[in-house]
Length: 355
Ligand SMILES: Cc1cc2nc3c(=O)[nH]c(=O)nc-3n(C[C@H](O)[C@H](O)[C@H](O)COP(=O)(O)O)c2cc1C
Image (cartoon, rainbow, N blue to C red; front, side):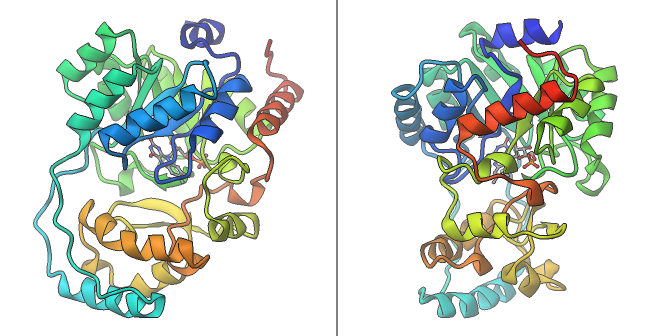
């Protein structure tokens, strides 16, 4: 399939995908603005309850009639043995005090939300469903197919991409080491799955026959052009969209991105228990050398939520998860439609033919 066929199958004008960004970041306003400008907008639904997924979808639909993507976490939720929780509770206790919060308590975790979230996605029936952290069951993949919903799966290695192709995805999102936020790794170790985006795209392109979407550290049209030259059919950008006015990025987070000077991103398990790339801040520093006290995902994620919510309210970047990719210093505070125009202009300048 050539790139033009892929785009017409999606019903999208430009090969640019705004990455799903969990929490309140990829708002209906951002998703709709991207779709209306000819890109593919993505709603991040992994942290939403089924009725919230349907509500966000309706709110987005009221702003655009273009094809859009809904994204979920399809794995990684299994609870491993929980280590001694006292060191983490005590460390968080001190931070809670400075933020004026009551002492932290270990949350009880509900069962994996994926099955009920997935039913909501089927009901919403978006053009595209993308997922990360694993692969939905064969039955789930069949149900997507029956409804004509195209599936995109995230791979951080060639082996993961091969499994995704076998499971029937319409495209593989190749998430390179430079990418912001959580690693999608679901097969090997996180450490062995840190492959630079362009190397990963090249290798996956050779290994599978479905289209490959490059993701990780891509900030401008010339970055995207380089990925296209080695066989990418589209690009999925997260960090580049975080500073759009339509994004739900808290002000302190936005300021941290726009003032990031050198390569200040790190991979950390501090906020969620799962490796993710973000800007170094006080919380990450506080946990340095205390990695053993970090609880597994999703427990650490639930436990740090009150801290992160309070920090966002207090406009304090010290205790917020500041997810960002390695291209963070090149983020531009442009409205989404202008950012897409700029990316397309730069891709054309770099020699990529776009209609
Ligand atoms: C703040 C943020 C939140 C993210 N949340 C999700 C998510 O919910 N689901 C997902 O598949 N990918 C998520 N990603 C990863 C993106 O899909 C993509 O791989 C990444 O943004 C690419 O790197 P870049 O940020 O350098 O462009 C997130 C990325 C960021 C920056």
